Image 1 (cartoon, rainbow, N blue to C red):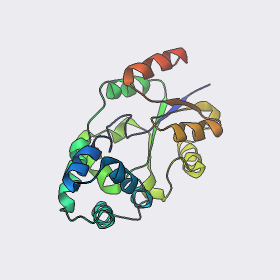
Image 2 (image 1 turned 180 degrees about the horizontal axis):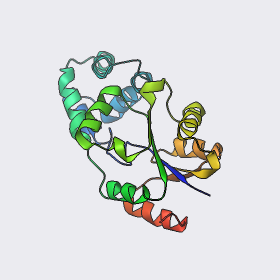
Image 3 (image 1 turned 120 degrees about the vertical axis):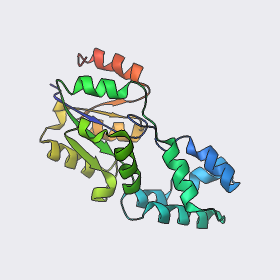
Image 4 (image 1 turned 120 degrees about the horizontal axis):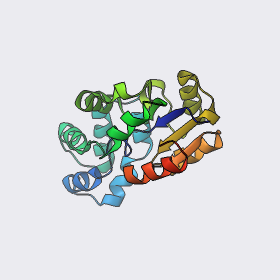
Length: 197
């Protein structure tokens, strides 16, 4: 029986980096596909695992791209892209009445500090676990197991909601019921099918 629901943050509760590619590729005068290959490689993993600051990340991206743009401008473009996904705060507030909620997110320290300050969402969840804090990121099974430990629950009592297919697959492999997020409306339909709403 499900008594705990674990949410991802980016592209589930808040928009993340999706959508910044075009703005940044235009600024760097670089093909969007090439930028994505550079942007989401090992350097991105280092940022998510807390091994780089946000500014160090952008400086490395610019070095790999052979361009020179003010890192603060890239920081601003990224922050401007963070917005609440319509309907999700209301849904989470409704679920809080009957379920223990957790937040498990691959994220950078500075982006989380900005988002927590702007959106004040952290109090919606009993446990917030970010990749940069522990040097692990989804879909590594260790971060899922750590989340279960911090919540004090078993895998088969949890539902996990994430937009990333790999993360959903790993959660399922660990015995956690998992839903791939598309829209808040579709999620509500899926939760109703599970008798959660």
